[in-house]
Image 1 (cartoon, rainbow, N blue to C red):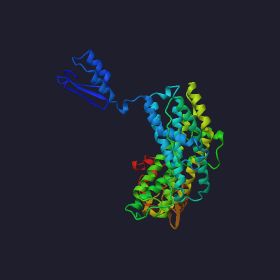
Image 2: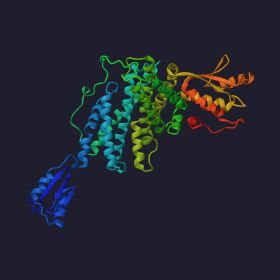
Image 3: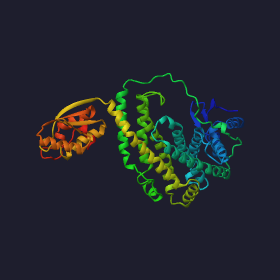
Image 4: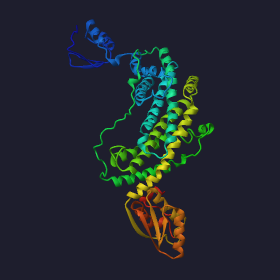
Length: 488
């Protein structure tokens, strides 16, 4: 029994003790409490009390091995399931990918917490788990594209569909090659192999021949026009930023090794992934909430372009992360290089790069470029149009600097703007057109011109004209107002 101890309770894995003077103490383990009571306290704890408290073990009190067995159950069940097939075509559903993703992340975090990166015994198992997670995340995104492709309404998508299947085939065959190796490593490390056997019934696909009734009309939503203008402009901006990655012939092996990660890398791709994700979120929130099947077809088509790009970027980001972190450059220690070599025997780095760039990057740039015409059309259909009359640049007229600044303003917003000189109209997004107009203005001694088109661009052109188009009468550059800071 407890002697002279008015308050002893247990909360989770901590023991709370209150002595007769009201002093409070917490102990994480019964042994710590026993040692304290034997050495420094007037209290005496009975053997019955210690035994009773020690038997109340909580799930978080169990050992590393026991926890790893719990965390590995679903993961190893999936590996057993995958190992029994010789083709991946009908095996890998989104549910199977999701069941691989969740436990592999948990196991990776658990192993990292316990120092697997610095353990020769555990490092290979840890790297296999990371490989499964990233390839499964990439496979999930590609599977999503394959499932949704019919709703994207993309032009000439037959070849894209076939290349998508090739990519998915590589990812799934790599996972299938890893599964028996993972099971072998688990046995070596004395991780319990589950007795339960999964079947295809545990992993149904997400597609069916049925559709739910459409009875929520979300056309003509408030502020739709204002927001579609902003989204179309951002689409054009993203397409322009990614244009430097466009190519027309597949990269060869030597070229792939040169551009990854020098030009194409995870950090850059993640940045664009976030931009496109924000674009899609804005569209779904402010333009069309209900999905793909109904509504303004042009808007749905535009969403199809940036939706497929978003999921491609998701896949590319995962594969680049796996390549850069796990296959590209091993650490200086021999164990890292040995494990990297074993991984490359399971996941071919050359094929991984070829699929990432020649499929992923290629079609990302392709669909952004093809979608530009539609985005431009939607933008010009929905922008607020107006007109302004301004003076021409004093002394030198529309030479290089003023023409470039005006063109940059128009390109920044993306909507159509024309410079009107008499009966002639010039494209204000073209430096060449503006200089051509400048020749006519000078020849006919015109002092004022009219701009017509996108009200957003005209507002900034008016500000630019107010500071003589950013130069003094001698043609030297002058500071621009803060409203035009994007021109710097």
